[in-house]
Image (cartoon, rainbow over all chains, first blue to last red):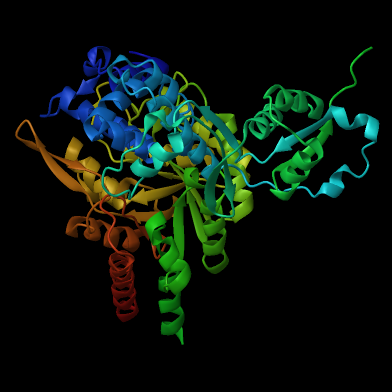
Length: 262
Length: 288
């Protein structure tokens, strides 16, 4: 007799890989074949997880069509099943999977559309956080400002793409009508996604602001983020950029990085 | 006066499952219902979903129904998930917290279905340990629901209702008696729903679920599928009446997921559940 852990491992393989081998012998047939009984569970697993991915990536689904989406989702979920029970958190790796998935190699912009939808999904479900006022910097000595580290609202996300993904998304989002054309040669975008009240919103940023905010989101010090902004090669006003972050309600925690050892 | 109190108690006992497309209408119209039940995993982030739940909670008692804790998993329940559930319990102060006699996690993969367990002494040991851990962390009693089953393991040694009774005895957990699941399981595995129900310890039943199911034909035989996509079937209403006869009026919930109808249809089913409870109470009153 198999231990429960082994029964469950065999069941997992039957659900994800379609390999009933080890399991079928453990199932009482009772007039209906073991394979038919297991198929009920496999259907539930595959359909519910595919539905979860479709809910998170509706524009990707519209671009590739339902059938292809279900095919891609089935392969993805076999290789990368969820690791958590909150399905809104499932699909972090779907964009990278699509980027390496030979059948959609021609749809060069598709992985970035998926990344964009992932950021919007993350923003919709991100934890609520209290925004800080600029007065939270009142006690910081001028000499320490380069070491400031801002934690940003967890709904914020950043995506730079060589494709006009915002326009591609607009014409393929749920409820979009017709087949509006998008000029793929229109150039790339740098997008910031966030949640404002109950709504997920996005906007395009200039190169310097994008580099600055993305660096801060990645945990950089104010000095480090400033360097990233300057490296973007456009005029940049650090004071105004920090004030903008506060005005947007984007800063939820302020700390100081340890002083560098001279 | 006594009749009035009785009707109020029945009305307070009947709830429906809260589904996202109905939320705005419920907040706007505040239908006369005793309570709502939500799937805990839909509210573990922030944003508008959680804000709407707070709004519902201001007007109604709430029941948190988990679908992702995987009480039957042999590798131990996910402590991170359990802590997120605890946060939600602390935030919403629900009247009931429930989960399932099933598993969904193996090798770190979450399979998003209520998968069946072989009912053996080893399994009882594992589930009881997981239930005890959950109750300890949550600081409250958990109700454990009987699943709908499509298969039976050859090496199972304990009938499901006895397994649930033993689990309740060992851990002090309560039971969520899903009468639709009893009907579906008994139809699929061969068994008598009334006998199943009678084998459950009535005193442990803290909640009843009602829902509809579908049927498919496989190999010339019918399998019932617990899809929560139809009105409650007559045979399930009969089981509900029998359950109330055994345990009196307990919180009872109408669930609907697939092909979700307008809220009015759920409210109609909820009224039908209240009618069953009232008819029984009338019969009791006459007998007294």
